[in-house]
Image (tube, rainbow, N blue to C red; front, top):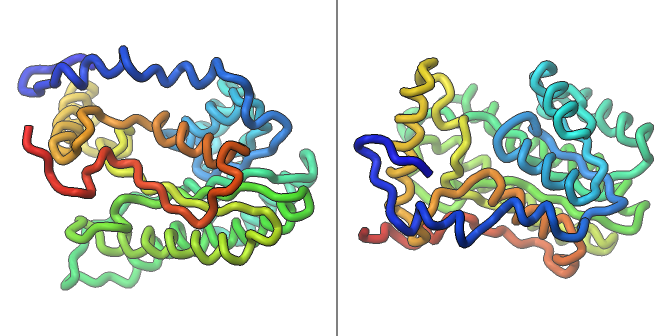
Length: 287
């Protein structure tokens, strides 16, 4: 990690790459061989990292996105299948399931990753439209996807469903209450689904990431690459000082945890919500 003026990188952070080599994941034995995975919102950030890692581990990956140009490019670069869809659209979900049935007749892994940027609000700034969007994307869409894919998983003898939630589901004081409420509902949906689907050997878990270094945090702030980098470093530093672990998490860190949940290595884990936030939940750490 290269420091810019005004952004101090601790020795621990700069040396982390010597300790943790995420690329080594791709060199291990394929853990998803013979499985079909569906990833919603797979064109960038965490979604793209999931698509790449699952494919490297042997899965036949189908991913969704709203941007057809980006989706087609990711599909070419990763050797996976893109299905253009807004998962908040019920008809699009039905078409996606039919596409998967026609492709190979099964779905073994579902990752509900598609999300929407959080609107700024407060307790005294209630906005119906913002709340509806958050619920549509982060609750209704995952629930609909779970209901649609579970029968296929049951027919195949089981499966793994992973919901990408957020640290915001566990904290107060966020800039978007609507987003936090929707993600909290997604965590609880995970528990309900785990209890209902366990008899069919379908495991349902969620991951609640804290700050993850992706382009979404600087999108729309500026078109200047240098300023984007400056903003990204400032935002990363703001979050890193709240963590006990001296590093900035990447999309690949989330994907690595999801690989564990998708694989048979986690065959007895269901109904869990896994925090991936460098212990920032437990208070600010003095540097």
